[in-house]
Image (cartoon, rainbow, N blue to C red; front, side, top):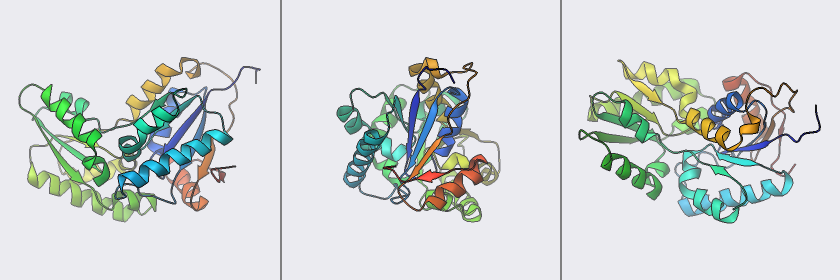
Length: 271
């Protein structure tokens, strides 16, 4: 490798859901070193109190930066973004931070029926950040569209544990309940980064044509805009990704094999 420094991008998630964002970042920023931190000791985040989550996320990021330099932080977790991104930006004004939120605006632009569904965690849907996003998107939309939400309880946990059979069953249960409420939904926002990992289960549960909106690509584009030097064409050998976990390392090792087909040597957050 040359003597030029390698751009370091931190990818934070409550567990393994951020691997869907990691995959998009790897494609968009092949010249960057990706460091992943999974807080799987506390996963899933979706049903925990917001104040506790805010304290947890800010403390983990503070400790992470103390042991590893980061040029950019990606919060690859809708719930962590909803409850903690403002506090993180205030505490780390020198660090660019990219969050993720349910892609309601792109879904409203894509729908033909005017009916959009959003599946997310309960914490995300109840957050002030999501409610403000929803109101702003609907206020600026023409034609009187509607947005219908469903808290997909249990799904992130099933994906976290690698239980694909249960995940399929939960996708079917939650999507059918949403479609019973609003049969004309033709566009579904996957409002948790765990959910795109079981994309085929959503399509099977729809029992008809439905567009799935995953914000991972938009997050990767934003990261590339902030780090143009980490884009394609470096032609250099890159350091292996760094994987950290607050819980049992086997959970993240299994997930990288299952969802990315990658081996992973998993460290503790402080190593």
